[in-house]
Image (cartoon, rainbow, N blue to C red; front, side, top):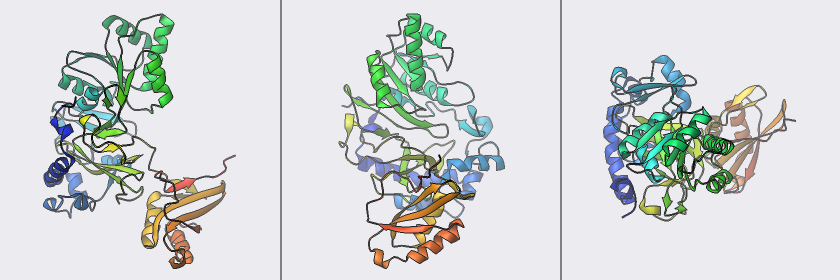
Length: 417
């Protein structure tokens, strides 16, 4: 038996897919009871949404839309199905963007990444995420409570006190940003303090380059794993280990349905292609339906079937931002406009708008993958560029499969010198 939190993580993939799809109609019906989702899904029959193909027909709601939605209907844009007064907490992120937390245990589903990092009942972890307005620290609190381990609510800052707490209380796990763990270790060296009790860490909210992971191993923290989470969704995916070997990519949480879509659209891309992360989340208090995170990632297609016994889909982790909106000659050009141009011309299999030259003297060229350049109309595509962007652009036909698999719809290669 794999060392997993529960049997959900080891379900046969076909069983997981069947069970998630069976739950979809109920999720859609519950969401439509909220005023915001009722507007967004007004023409949707919940009972019809019982497959990935059906789900892909629904509109995408973007994280970037939340500020406008919430300004129209405070605090959550009418996307919450539980009244505000019955929630446990309300958070505020810069923007401001407001996020809820319900009253059920491990509401953010953070026990899974903690367990994968080696946290067990009876352990002690130092929680160095901020407790100020935002939910990261409380995600950890809920997961730790589910696992039955104790927690030091250290928060961020006050580095000397962090070192003192570790050297005195001897926690076995650090949770927080990777950069702050490095600061703590360096401060401990400066203070000649012993922080060697920390043998593992679960980090998030920042990139973790392999050079820094190696630095941690050299400084006494051999197990450092990442979690991919957000303030509106909670846990999305997380790294795992099999024995002492880190498994490829990040495994998805059991309560989300993942789609990778072409940036600027809601159209799923083939497995392995980089695109925007879109999630449907089974949360009874704050259901999210085709919620576009603005992050780029890709499904791993060349991994063992079930590393460490976990059978869920694995992704490459965070690969950048999907919002590539660019200003050209005083006009904003959006990824959705590039998508709309390509849709007008079915011969375009994939497109990327390249902005080159110097500022104020830019050139726009739409690179189009087409199977047969002779059948494609250069002039018609140029006219579509002009109509949709109000800017002049050129067209270059390129071989199928030649555009990079990096999720970019707009590439800004201007000379800013």
